Length: 294
Image (cartoon, rainbow, N blue to C red; front, side, top):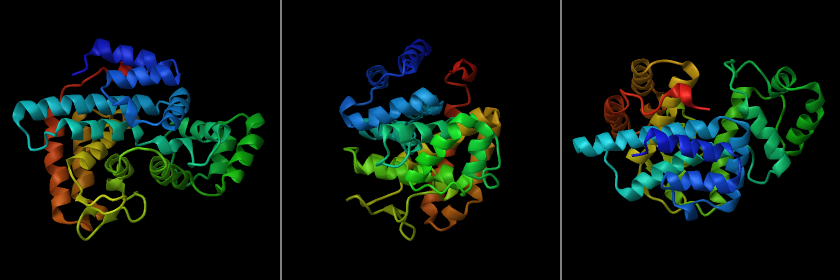
């Protein structure tokens, strides 16, 4: 398990903003260096330099560490093999790779996309367009360049910010398909917004609860569920600023009343519910001081 001192070292390395330093940070997390392509490291470095996204992913991995220690101690049915634990860690790091833009975007275009995603304000994304968002949040000197970049990428500046934010799911799915990332990790990362119903088209057979794409033929399992739960838990703790108990209540609420889970076989909701029980116990005491994150 990574101790607080190691966590600080990892944060220091990734704050330097260089691909080589980020590689060292990932190695400290026991992420197989060969599992991430050079092109992905470049995108991760850009994302890390402009936003708190990688801090969020790192927090989720801290949760993963605490969770699996609990699962081991209690012989939980959610205890995963070393290989599946690696899948969870790697997928967690890659869930938001799409926040760097489309798979064919240039370095400069990715800078525009990541800068838009980097602003983490509490707004109603259904009522604000990209055009309005740029006008309000960026210097006027940047507007023309940003608009031109979005136009070249074929992104309609009239769509809402919610629609724009959701684009990262399909972008990330395509980016990972164009890498050497394993199909299972691609699907775990691609389904991390399953509870919201925001997933790439046709990656799940809703009648069977199976992934049947990219050569994979398996049911939704603990790996997929945990990455989705850690993502939601951290968002509640960081963005909403709520305590552990409230975050857990939120997770239960999202699972009990959920139109997407209603379309899937019962075992999927049961898996989420049983995993939340372990998440609740494992994360009752914070892994890290949220105030120490940078």
